[in-house]
Image 1: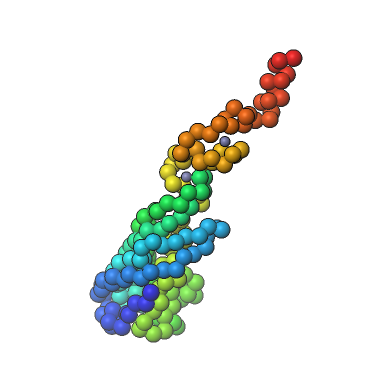
Image 2: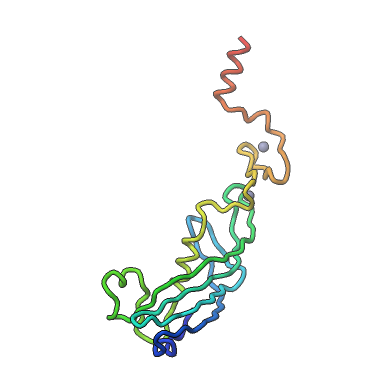
Length: 168
Ligand SMILES: [Zn+2]
Ligand SMILES: [Zn+2]
């Protein structure tokens, strides 16, 4: 995902708008495969703040992910902010060099920066819905689709012990 900053680099104090769309390959995150079912749409305003370029905007797409509880795949819209600082190599302070994207030429590649923001935005657990009932630990039935037969059998062993004791 390349962006040409030739014009904005020479326009001190000005802002230019960019609209980019590109299909990203699937990524592996925390052992899960994340597939982008729509192109990554990046809309940013780039401001020339003399010593640096400020990029502010949004990243939008749609992902196909697996629910952490029931393992069913589902589509999840992605809409997150994108904020970045772009500085010409040699002009960045030591501190900026650690966080900003340093560029040498008029064309810069922002795919890695965009992907970073996407991965940072992902929750630890992706759920198909907040009240997903998950899978039965005994038979593996997806409990969102209906109750299985083994409900009675899945008593906590400690409770089972207690039940036996009560019968004695
Ligand atoms: Zn689920
Ligand atoms: Zn079951």
